[in-house]
Image 1: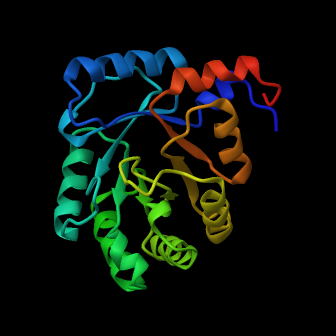
Image 2: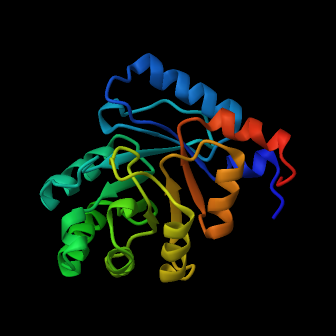
Length: 223
């Protein structure tokens, strides 16, 4: 695989979800994202609405980071974010439901948010793959697809179990078979790591240190 710096940038949701983030921090994120040519910026829902240049999508999170919110609350949060200009919603499932094999509950949770996210807007489902068994990863991806999700996503980046892994991305990509996108997020800090995720099947990357990753394309033969 050969990707230019600009091509790699278009995989990226340039992300700022630290709870101490300020409006000035978000303004800096937008400016940097526009400069780097990323696909979107991803911020906490309380930071919406945003003023962004044309061509820069806006993503936000829902039920974040624990996923232990009532589905109706997640749906209301998603609906408000859409009304405030979000193009994409990254929701967190109830991780315990997946690990206990309650995939009907996972599907219902995702379906509730999907009903609040209209056609033309993107719904990504964060399954927190590092905290799941392989069986649960597969089941959560299947439940997300059945509920109408557009992407499955590895991680919030806040769970102590860790972030994205090549193995989880590969399993997720095999499970959804190209019918859904796969977003790798959490702990991706180098160009080599980003390329490995894409090789494994990732179609989007969640990065907070985007500039360092893109700068790395200039010092590796992989791009």
